[in-house]
Image (cartoon, rainbow, N blue to C red; front, side):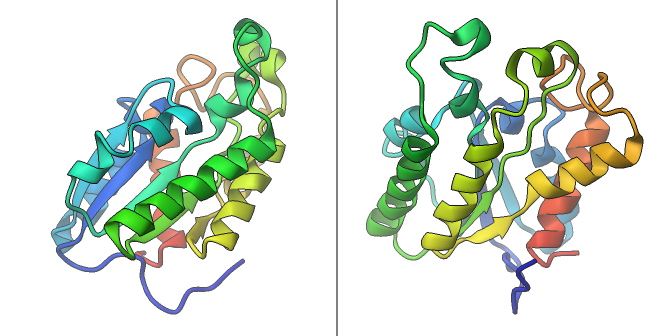
Length: 207
């Protein structure tokens, strides 16, 4: 595990959480982050959007992200990139792991080019699929998680190894893919969202 020499965030920072429905959902980690970071007067903005994929996230950089004032950015993408072209979305264009990697690198590069040297963290996506969703998508996210880690390392971003920690968490419960960590086989329960927030804060050196 990488050990960083200082916390990711400072007092009075504004943090934007950029991602898909795992970020925008009512039980997501973002609300728990805001609660834990409130004593440091850190403003947490939820910029997640349901169904977001890296091509769409790239397209909305200018219209959404570039209009915000912020100090730090957390990027949590990859789940929708991995499932597009599979199962119920088999008729949509497939996003290959290398394309996902390229999009992540482009996104981070654009942010730094136009907004300066912002603090950027990449959350390595975990596989949230349980029950029927796991039967449909299996472990298709594994190569995308590795590409997220590779992109973060290349661009020198803070890495949050959520994929590893989440699998440890799931294994500790002894119920591999029964519905227990999600309310609909994909989106987190409040307890799962809290766990995700704790992993993020630990990786950022905030707790």
